Structures are given as structure tokens and as C-alpha cells.
Image (cartoon, rainbow, N blue to C red):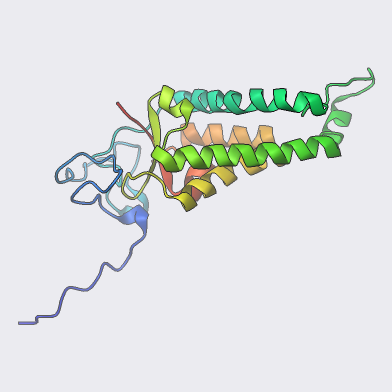
Length: 214
């Protein structure tokens, strides 16, 4: 009889792992062994690549409507103070109007040098805000208020610094410097339609999901 140890798992892709037998630090998994994979994926389809559902034993996915509201709360928490701070320096937004501007001119003149500086400042603040709170316990103030949190898809733990930063950059960089309306629209649509984990583009980049918490 061979005494060689069994070979390691051939694939450590976090999307194909089963939940761990015990709750890791910061995990949302229930204590004790995870339940067997359900016959039908409760989130709309089998786990990625045919693996067992990584969310087995975790709280349900957060509702898209609550996610949008939480994001709006976080946006206001940052944007209102930032705008007030910018007023003595000319304001972060140019509201002047000579009466001849049309939509094309508004788009073409979206960023003056002054506004670009404030957009860059805003980008740093938004990314730092999201990264800090997501890495701290998975919950920004908006998510905490609406009882949600960000979790790693592979084991339900709080995202590490690199995942939190990647998630924040993907969320805010295009939204503040490039194509805000299109970017928010894509993410809102994905929250409602992405299967099986309702991941926005930031979730896909960070390999995270947003779940409800008690």
C-alpha cells in the first residue's frame, strides 16, 4: 500500500473552492461543518466552473436596491464636505452659465484644469474611504446602516488590503474621471442581472460579493 500523501488540489481558483470546514478569521460562514451543496444553486445557477456554491452557509446576497441606496449614502457623506471645502477655492463644480451653452458644449468643457484638480482630490478621498472601511470590516457607513457587508467570495472573510483597494479603484476611477453615467449604469444593471452572485465590476475585480448581515 502506498504511503505517499495525497496530491494537492489541482486547482486553487477561489471560485471553485468549497467552504472551509471551520470559520476563518472574519468569516461569515456559520460555525460547524458547511452544509452540503444544494441541488439547485440558490443564487440563480451552478457555481462558476461547475464548482460547489462558495456562498453555501453564508448570509443571503444583499438586495440591489439596498446596495444602490448604501452607495448613495456613502457618496453624500464624502461629496458634501468635499464640495464645502472647495468653495473658498472656487468650488469643485463650475456652475457658471452664459446662456449659450448647449449639451455638446457642456460635455466638451466638462473639465477645466481647476475641476480636474478637484476630481483627482475627490478620487483619492473616495478610494481611501472605500478601501479603509472595506478592509476594516467589510462595511462602509452606508452598508452598515443598511445591514450589508462586502465578503470575499472564496471564504466569506473580510477583504484584504489589495482586494479592497482594487475594488475601490475599479469603482471610482472611471466614475470620477471618465464616464460616470455609463459606469454607474453598467454597475446598476449588473447588480440586478449578474448570475449567480450579483457582482458589479468592482466585485469581479476584487473577487468579492455583497451579503446581508443581521
